[in-house]
Length: 343
Image (cartoon, rainbow, N blue to C red; front, side, top):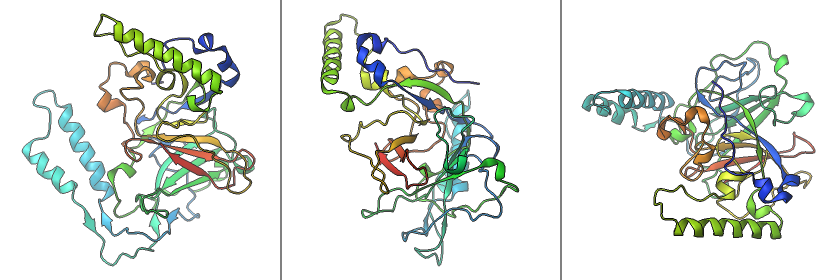
């Protein structure tokens, strides 16, 4: 089933005509649980990976000998989903609770070294034929594959993520690796994605408010203040929350490709290519949920009757404290190193 973003509550360009020159597009990926094939774009699905090519590994020194087993994490999710789906007496039984406690247990890998090659987790793969806003990769590459280390133990502070992005020409792949190496344990269940098929949808988007021209930003602020003041004086206590540029009119939540980055957790800062200093462009947003209480107007029409706790977090991936990860690429040369920002 396709996913359809509802029309925006107001025509923002009619209110602020200057935005027409700043309009962009982004492709919402709309991941949903499924059984994707290696030939399909997916989150958490099997990768189109050649049998004769080494699987990506994290070689940075950090603890990797203690954590939860990926198979236990997936089993725990299945048990919980089945328990809460029961029409009569939903929720885990005493027997299921015992199983869940066992599945939640951490395990230690005897003899593991901090420098042992650690297989990375295949997070997503995107074919350009499916995603309108996905740029062409090096050498006309049509497939972007994203991997991450299942421990947030990187960088100077030892709390950062580690990502690897690979571009390839899909038509050159012969025999496909069917059983890629997997980490024996992971630092958290939030690193283990559920297999999801994608329903890409291109939508209109506008820049983050803090990056708009000063005068335009001030006018938008004044408009929002007037809406909030009107809501405070409204007699209807059940009236919807007043509209906001950030939450309803500019940047959609959820997994998406291209468009503009949100800077809601930090002040905007330059993201320049470390090789050529060119300002980088947003390539991919990895989000913890497709909508939340503040961004519910972006909820797809097909999901309006579905419980939020079941339909808004299909990938089971959580970035930071329920945030999003924005990955940037150099527009001059896609082979230059990527950068990312946690919001």
